[in-house]
Length: 88
Image (cartoon, rainbow, N blue to C red; front, side):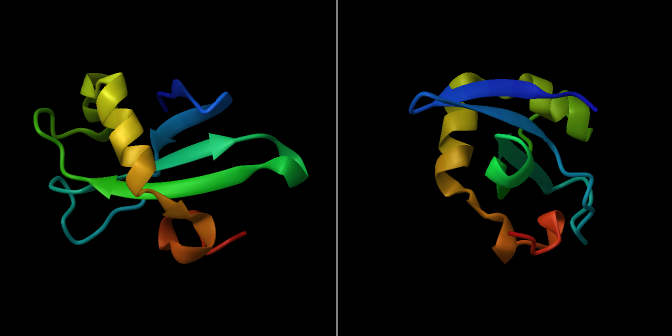
């Protein structure tokens, strides 16, 4: 699974497709933003509609850094999302 890395406020976040499939299959994808490891790990989730490619991996590759930052700003903590198993 492809992973992108972005730095936000001095913290590195790995970004990858969640693999969670909604009823909107190719019209809406989920991204996981993951920072840290083990007990220090934080996961945030967001959904977006791809503008170009309709595959999760290609769509992520096409997102620019500004778009990733915007999506991060809209993301929610993992405990609010089925994509992350509602885990904290």
